[in-house]
Image 1 (cartoon, rainbow, N blue to C red):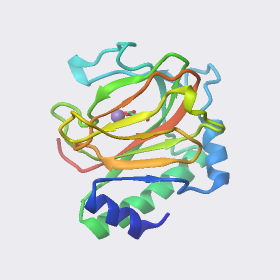
Image 2 (image 1 turned 30 degrees about the vertical axis):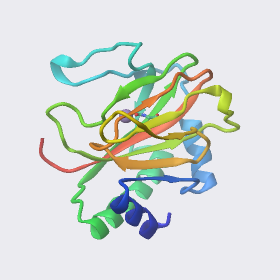
Image 3 (image 1 turned 135 degrees about the horizontal axis):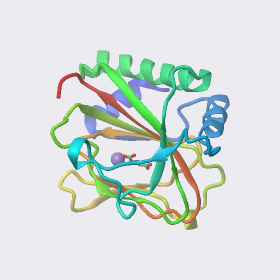
Image 4 (image 1 turned 180 degrees about the vertical axis):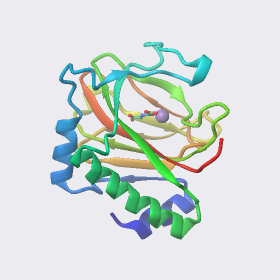
Length: 197
Ligand code: OGA
Ligand code: MN
């Protein structure tokens, strides 16, 4: 990863799309881990926290599995993200203290309606990362990530969820949505956090 470039662009625009920041070997392992074998490792994703927590398929249709530090592939990924956390902290003084992340699988016909990653009353998510794990992704498959300007009105960019692509953006500044996917769509979403509520 070009840590200077990432830091510079996050400082200037608040987001960056990277074509393939991680090694192929790691990506292959992550793609294999992002497979629902029916063992209930993957669970229905929910919207909101606490009493507001709910499951509404029309808003969010993915199943998720949190990273497991006991797994060697997950640990390899988490180590890469830890290096990124330290590099960004020292360059941008963000004070990020940890990283939480999960695999996500969207089945055919599902997406994730426009939302902000900063949970109500829980403003500790600073930076969002999404890594895509879909080989031979075709534009007609849908499933793009649409990122909106901070006002939430205009579209800023669309990202195809192609194998190895990673987007990083300021969690609070950029509302975004996942357009309906016409085929199975795999990704890893993650958040660097500061402490406190
Ligand atoms: C999320 C999210 C985007 C994507 O999980 O909060 O916005 O492209 N994911 O998978
Ligand atoms: Mn999101």
